[in-house]
Length: 105
Figure (cartoon, helix red, strand yellow):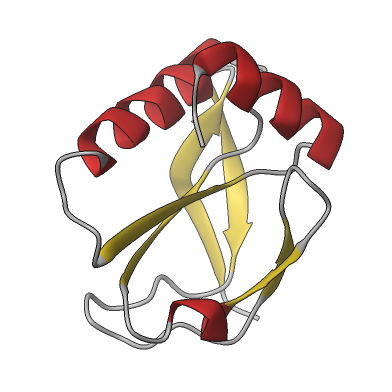
């Protein structure tokens, strides 16, 4: 797996990322995510939609919190054919708490 060093910093220290960054327009590989209500979410669920994946470490950080809220706000202006999924390492119950507190679907 490809290593990418020095692209991301955590508390001022470089973090090594694994994997390739997909090209714009490239098809995403299949995935299985778990929603805040413990439902499985698959790439195929969005076959007829434009899907934007937002990946962040944890919604319990101020930067990630702001990012998720901003994407949610912007998503409301994009129409029904666009879906934005914010994906984090948080457990489903923590995601549910965040979404209910922030008023996010």
